[in-house]
Image 1 (cartoon, rainbow, N blue to C red):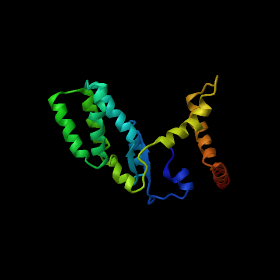
Image 2 (cartoon, helix red, strand yellow):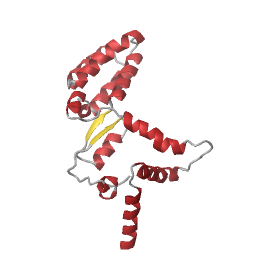
Image 3 (tube, rainbow, N blue to C red):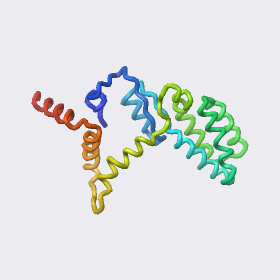
Image 4 (cartoon, helix red, strand yellow):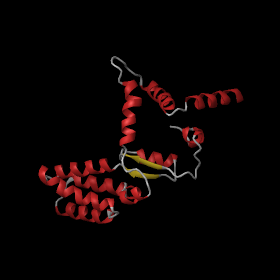
Amino acid sequence: MFRCSDNASVLTGMTPETEIIGVADGGIGLSEELKRQFPTMQFILDKSHLKDHFYETAEEMGISKKDRARWVKPRIRAISKGYVGEVMEELTEEYEKKPNKRLKRLIGYIERFYDALNYNSFKGKGYPIGSGEIESAHKSIPQKRLKIPGASWHADSIDPLLSLRILRADDWWDDFWNQRTEKLMAA
């Protein structure tokens, strides 16, 4: 993993004071690593991933397919408006009445991302609340190269290859190689 002192963020002029917004799914360790790299970052949990968790929970709780939206939508709306605590209380009460592993997991998920869910506030500040653009870029940058028919990859070669593809896609290719040459010449 790059360190802030020598990565692309510095090349684009970012400093420790730069406001950074990170939108991603709730993958284990992802928000924690981003916050470690960028301590002042505001992490936003991708809203569609939160909805998916609610729908999966509703299914596991035995809520019929036609009634799931009625169970999910008001809770997502309340979370979007900043009523995360109230939704947590409601879910906790449901869990106490009828324990369910998936519901307990949803409660833990919301607790973990408590400060990353106030979607209306984020939208009001002009922040994105979904990671769709990034996921689309993922298809055209890494996957396009890695999924060539007949290609096979060694784990050690994937990260360097993807780093170079991202440098090229972001038009940082020349900057990267100039910086690398300067470091080698200075050594």
